[in-house]
Amino acid sequence: MMKIMLTMISAMMITIMLMMLCTMISKNMNSDREKSSPFECGFDPKSTARLPFSLQFFLIAVLFLIFDIEIIIILPMMITLKLMNNMSWMMMMTLFMLTLLLGLYYEWKSGMLEWT
Image 1 (tube, rainbow, N blue to C red):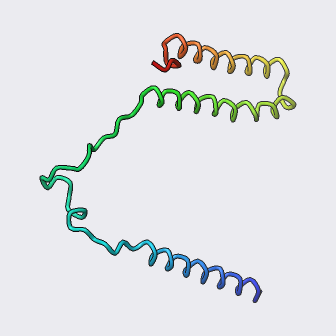
Image 2: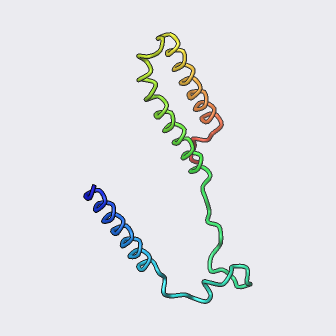
Image 3: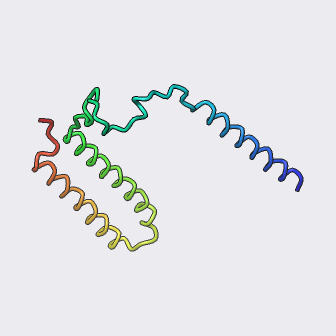
């Protein structure tokens, strides 16, 4: 019981010391009056507020996420093969893959995959 208490106290002390150290290190000592003033005060910004963003890159990233999630869904399906009827498992997998292939075909035909 004493070892558990000693371990808890030492873990708490290390945590507190790390939090204090991070607080001391992260303090920004240079407080600039212009930086602390609100943006709507009337001065012109040094650069534009919005950066240009490629919509094509965003669509490719969404496509990657869809197929990444597909892999996460397919992997547990391999484990359920032993638990389910083979015919119902095969129909479920075929429906899932057909849905993904139809989505890929739609994206391909609508031109989302071309870098123009």
